[in-house]
Image (cartoon, rainbow, N blue to C red; front, side, top):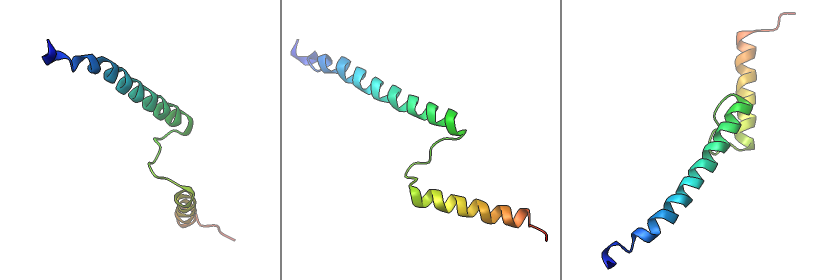
Length: 67
């Protein structure tokens, strides 16, 4: 009987892991629905500023402003 004692911990561990997976997936889906794309991991203010700068540079090259 002592050989299967570890199975007592499997059910609560499975519940905890399942809840963590569900919580992470819900956050992912909400962010994807709100922003239209998945969240970039480790994206801080510097990365956001560089994305805006890059987008502006690319847009200026593709659509030059004529005087």
